[in-house]
Image (cartoon, rainbow over the protein chains, first blue to last red):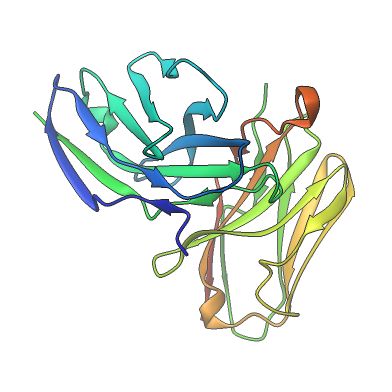
Length: 115
Length: 117
């Protein structure tokens, strides 16, 4: 079964606007972490933001925030004030403590920021 | 500080040849992960090490694949013999175990693009 689901294969957003990239996850492990990575066309994987399952507050890192809804098992990434350089693939990933510490990745969402 | 270093960045080889991919993790990190990315299967874990010891190699496709970590600053992923279906981007990532045994963020290397003809 798919542990991480990203339902949006592609998204468009206009420069300076906010965009939400969806991610839902499936786990019965009470201790887990959720991550978002950015992969630009150059191919590298860039860490953006992390949310732990016990964190009370939603994580924020600059223009990135994570809308963590534990009961719904969702961990959406919000990018505020989009920039042209935000155009990339975005991957949601989960790490479960009781299953080792490897990352399970979603299929990714391709984001295109237009002028 | 240097990030995760991988070499080579690109590799083109012929079917049947041996391929060796190399990785130097971030200094101080004690966990190392090898991932493979393809269009069909996305990003998938191949194997990971903690303190140089392989912990989970269930993602290694078959016996043609092997990985070693002889010391804290070096790991190799070897494919012998290589096949066209092994063509992919291979990423190495490293992290450290944090407080209370919690693993921390994985930082990825630039990847090795492998093409097997």
